[in-house]
Length: 61
Image (tube, rainbow, N blue to C red):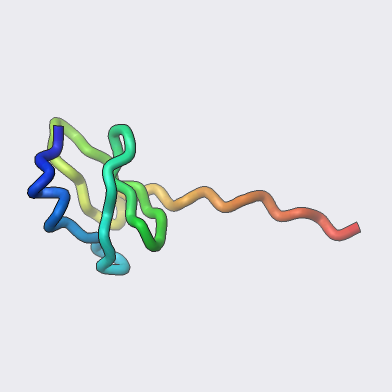
């Protein structure tokens, strides 16, 4: 489990905004990148992040 004090000082390395804990990922409140947690250690590397899934685009027709 990630310590609350650690979560309070972490920020997204891309957009420097606050993060939140969702299940087993750390999620950026602004850009939506999801960073993994391995062995109770947040892996805040941009290349390890998953991008927020975008809503499917509707086709004009």
